[in-house]
Image (cartoon, rainbow, N blue to C red; front, side):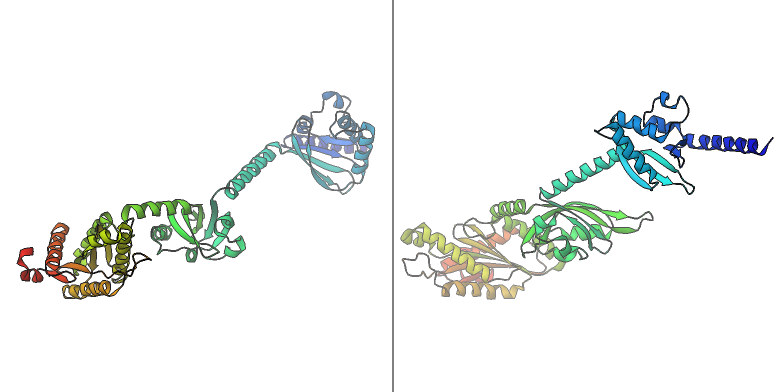
Length: 444
């Protein structure tokens, strides 16, 4: 066999091998020589571009033939097919590497990559990215919807690292007044207040310390303007493939208005509407809590029953508005005269009850006398048109010793007896059960 025949045989063998290889590729492939004549293409290309068999009946078509066919069927948009073909041929002759996307008339999206060859010509790879683009568009659409939902709802989302520092925020400015750059890199914890009544920060801390999720916990968050926004917070931990905690991802919903309404309802349910003091229901709840705590500490507990002297005279002489103003003033004097750990409640009418906690029985009379003198010495402005009133109170006190069991019914009955003793003994005085009742046996 001559050398030329041998070379031709090797060329055909190489072409067959190349064709076998590219026919198994998932993308369409074309190989053009320096003269823009097609040297190879696979079936996938003909499928993707929907080339009819007629184009390949006489062998592989030239690039010009394919470009003209595409231009005639509107593949390159509107325009004269001859002009569109010439422009496409000129671009191909430049032999420049390129990557672009083409949306075919049937909606299929192709990514086309052209790479020049060292000895002239180029290889083009056609990849169908229709599903990928649809998926990306779906993701983009969902992301845009989520962004709009966050921006137009009382919600913000966040992420923190394992140290509790913000790494991502969205929607926080409309709720809290902070821009992302104000919070990114800062710890979340200092912006939360645990001392606010109703705060569930303790539960959040426990969950995060254990690397557990939490849901719908109420947290007071300090706003940029210094106010407080109440948030219903839910979050879940993020872990790496080795189980190491990476941080938390959470969603917080503004419930400030709902919290205010809830607190208002609780205020109405547990407080006296006139004086703002605890009502009988709240007093009973607090007493049970203090009694349970006392079971552990065995510290003293005491009740003061406070009754306004001659209160009917105030109503009969100056009217009920003056009476209401007097009760509010006495309520304030009582509240300001005891510790924050104590509780003052209105039981009805002109009758108040004071719960003294962690107190030595010997100190009960001292506290009661202090309150009595405070009210006696304070002029009460009930009506602007009238002179200030001088009112007094009778106080019945009962102390619960360290080793004595508590029974509220018994304590209130004893305090009532002591108040009656104070009234019958001349009013404006303190009577302590049982010692002061021995001087007034008719009250027993």
